[in-house]
Length: 476
Image (tube, rainbow, N blue to C red; front, side, top):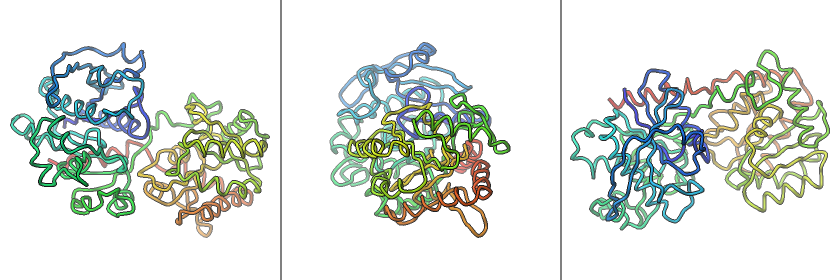
């Protein structure tokens, strides 16, 4: 089977979030299973020089973006037995960042057109073309409407993965002709139109052969007005081809026995290194080294979507407890200032690093006892799975992928891998944190049992990729 995985970002070349992790880890696992899976990406200027030097120039051609004639270069790089293709156009991608530009719609229109036209030239016609998020969501539409005359493309089946339905690609309706060079019929009859705009995501949902999202619970949630961001009606209509497949995490990168970013390695059978990492983290963050005090951690963007207004509301109450908190992240300036204020007021209990630091993040996963993730919504979430891999028990809002990955502690049976709350309120969040703190203080035996249960939970891509293989094979 041949699979072409199309995405706007991919670690380790460039990434801003979970999509970048998935675009790296899933194809790598599929290749291990003897699937000819290749990845196609934009060639961003910010790609590290070491990887740019490894790229091989294949050929170039011209792409028509509406009335514009644009250069397109094709580059190739092989890493971990995965072949990566890069679409090169410095006018569109020679910038400091990845997203956030006024012409993003045109940039990703070019990328999708170039991607489709490159397949014949590469002599790689996939059985399955796997699109991801709005940046590639027009591909199923284009294959069936603009490029249907290409005989070699007729058997391609398409999958669209929705990583976050909040980002849909809304543009003026005229851009359908202006960027993609197609007639306005499918806009005027309402197919790709929504609220008098062209909507990339809607087009992808309607035209893809299968649609999936990154957790089973989120697949159900986005069919409701509360979480569907306006597309819930379309998703209910297309429910027969919608499914949820839980993301995995890269077990090669997130392994407490081998992780080069942590000082002390440990395993589910020997947790001594966990305690040593905690002491190192307390020292590094300027907190008193106290083994008997539960150390809580936050590694996140500091936004309302991530639920940190709830934590700020409850910080005065939380810091009355016998607890410590370390925080790493950036985001809303008011949230940043709020955490700075409490860190200055309670230097023996709270340390905040308002920054982005991959090494410190891994040290927090490895050294903390409790991980806080009170998101308002969370399509999948990777941080809670990474925390559990390192024996750090999450406190989560039971929503989306958090609900699917964290089993709340049951004091009767002793089962569980963390702590949860249902109602999205500061009060309920505080109650869940108190449960975690109380158990840490009251029963070392129960706590260690939960740690081991969390560490033994299988979140590997080896397992998750099997579900994608089943999805692909069902398209045949």
